[in-house]
Structure formats: structure tokens, C-alpha cells
Image 1 (cartoon, rainbow, N blue to C red):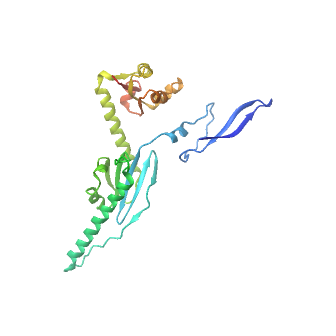
Image 2 (cartoon, rainbow, N blue to C red):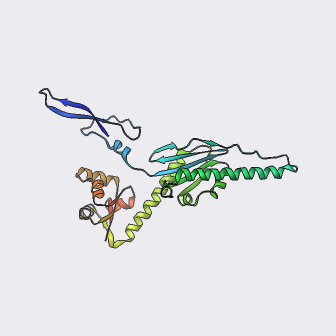
Image 3 (cartoon, helix red, strand yellow):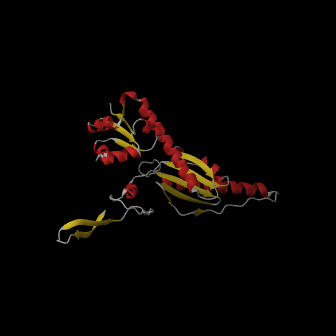
Length: 266
């Protein structure tokens, strides 16, 4: 939401500029000093881009925490939950088997509790489907592997991997998500190329078909998006008005075909 601060007037009292301020939805983490004739807001626009959520379970010994990755931002979803588990009995004797059974039962209950917390956190109550694009498990020890058999079937469908780390490793999370997104992009592009009867490519051809309401999906590179902006073509708004799904991604295969491809409705 924009808030008005006032106006700027020239020496003759004529209004020249309106001044507004806004509070972005996320903190601005970049500092840029530029001398330019244009007012740069591209990095601010990124703050308003919708990013898919990726859920992370960090499981470390007797405690677990849920995190969420949205775009570049990794944040804690729930506070760390701790559960004191029985220690391993090493002295032998008649009580060793009994204590081992008690420990195994305690671990089993603990993992069941984690799964219930996963469902509460990452499954939408209304749709009963995952509210995340992908799910990652990170931790030390072997409990994370044992937990996979307990994981709810709906979350298993979006499970991207299980990784060993003594800490919540941001690089592991982002690398896994990046690979997952790229794999989905490749599959999507291949599906468009395989449907040759509906394939459309080339800037002029795609834009013309879009104006005529013929496009179902458009994929273009960031460079092509910037080129269209300079030509006063707001392809995002056009796609929204004409019920066309748009993806702005960088893949060499798209660049080879002029930076923009699409699939017609028919």
C-alpha cells in the first residue's frame, strides 16, 4: 500500500511531483548506489513476487524444528521441540533387552509425534493436501532415516531428499530446491516441445497469438522479459487478462528458440 507524503512544487508554485512511501512485504537486504537517469525498482519488485514454499524438518537427536524456504528467505516456522529419550544401556545383564525395548518404543512414539507435527504444519486443513512445493529432511544421527517410514504419504510425494548435517545448512536447502525447480522446468519445456501441433515460438508470433487469446502457457527468459518491458509490453499483465499461465525462467533451451516459447490452447 502506498502512503502519500506530500508534493514538490516549483518556484512558481506549480506542482511537479507527488511523493509516496510504502512498507515492503519483506525486509530490503540490498544496498545499491547508482547514478542513473532511471529510478531502479527491479529489486523491489522481486519482493512482491510470489515464491513457492518449501518445508524443512531439522531433526537433531532429541529435538526437531520446522523451517520454511520462500524465495531466498529461510525462516523458522515452529519453535524447537525437545523430547528426552532413554539412553542406551551398555552394561549387559537381564535388564539390557528390557531397556532396549523401552528406548525403541520411546523413539517410535517420538517419530510418530514428529509426523503428527508435520501434518499439522505442512498439510492444509481445507484441501488435506501439502501446502508446500517440496519437503526436505536434514539432521545428524540415524533418526532422520528411521523417520522416513513414518512420514505421511502426502508429504512423501513432495519429499525432495534427506541429508546429513550437524546444522541447518542453508546451502543444502537452496541447492536441493534449485535442482527440484530445474527438473520441473525441464519436464514442462519437454512437454511443450513434444506437443508440436500447439508449439509457438518467436517474440512476434507468441505476442500476436497471446493478443488473440490463443496462448495457454508462455515461457520466456528474464532477458526477453526485460526486452519486452523496453518495448512497453507488459506480458505479465497481458497473460493475467487473457488467462494464460506465464513462467519467467532461464533455461538455455528457451534462449536457443529466441527467448520465448509457448503452447496454444488448440
